[in-house]
Length: 607
Image (cartoon, rainbow, N blue to C red):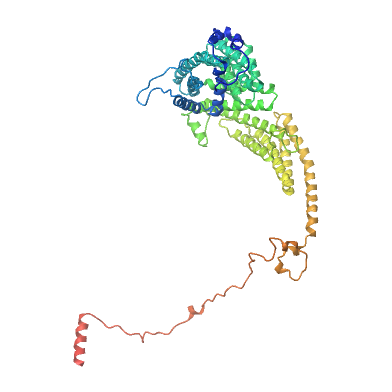
């Protein structure tokens, strides 16, 4: 953006708060007299965030964003006539302060830094399986720091205004802090993150509310990193602040970042978790990632209890399920040579006791199924707030009964899979059967609600009866089991009371609906339904005859029965004896050469 009008403040006023942090007085850069109207404004943060949101980083696609950066750099060099050589030879060109005649020259080092940094993030995500890529990651991070330093140095030119200088300095601090963060140099990383945060806070205070939201968002992204660095330096209270930030967060990139930081803090606790006990059997936990996940399961229970919002609880469950899938994949790779595990994957029966790692995999599957059920119950609770008949806030979609039916189907399917887990010696079928029956009652209830909306009274009443049947079975099972919560039993009893009232209401509505329909039907003469050609002898005032589509004849005409064509069968032919005609048949004379000679001779004698 070129020559954009800035708010009324001077370089020295904004740089005063950051002079002690950057180590350089920004005011000294403005000694050359450059008219304000000719100064370049380069909004680093806005340009970067718009590019990231539109080209893959919203979904964590680092490769797509890296490809976009490369294409944009190529387009910039071409439009600025600033190539790096020709098709045969590469001739690098350095950008200096005299070269900057257009603000687009500042885009080149910025997107070079972005490309290198997010290439490093892509390699970091792949380094879990390929350890060698960690070295490549660090090299790319250092390259991104080099480009960021070049950008900050170019923005110190008197041609750039105060905002550009401060934003480039904040971007450099953020990149450098990220490098030290990956190298686990916590004190330097914390100092640079704090420096970037301070600059963004000052920039936010200098603009209106519309413009400062972007800077405040960056402040929120940097704050968890500062607290994590403080925790690693020795501040034990920082982990509590990270958890509090996580509970207040929703489902966004900041929440995902907080989950990563919390997982890294829990890695220090994995030394104390050497084995896990489930259903009376203890198995060792060898994998570090599985240990981290099991600790996260323990911590997430406390986090969910202390969290108020449904969206925050759902976000915690989503994060936990993602970690569970990764931990299962690690165990699946380690069980590649296990014969029993391969047989179970093919659905074959297993004889004997399974291995410890196989049993641990079954335990993780049990956690995954139960946490999925809990997550879906929260989704149901959220959707119930927007059912028809309740006040619905603006921007929210009305919940259909079919949406709840689908979630209950998934819950029942997950519960039915639990008793089939490999290596489970304790019988879990009774408990899961009771829960499954109770959820079938709720599912039938919401199916009935969908029929009720369509005024299908017979089907609705039949489904209400099924709901009562499932509910009575579930209540009988709850008396046998002691580990079910009172809340679940109360919800079933509340459902029974609700269905008993709605069943009679539905029956009354069905009677009223039949009466309202029968009255107008009785007034309608059946003669009007006949076409005109069939009622010439009956006089009625039928206005439909004068319309564009009068009912004159039935077209196409109806089929009429006609007698079929008779079929004749000659049955006497099989019993008739015909006379012999052998005497009348001409006998064949013998042929050959002798016959020819005799015939010639006799024939000649006669002549």
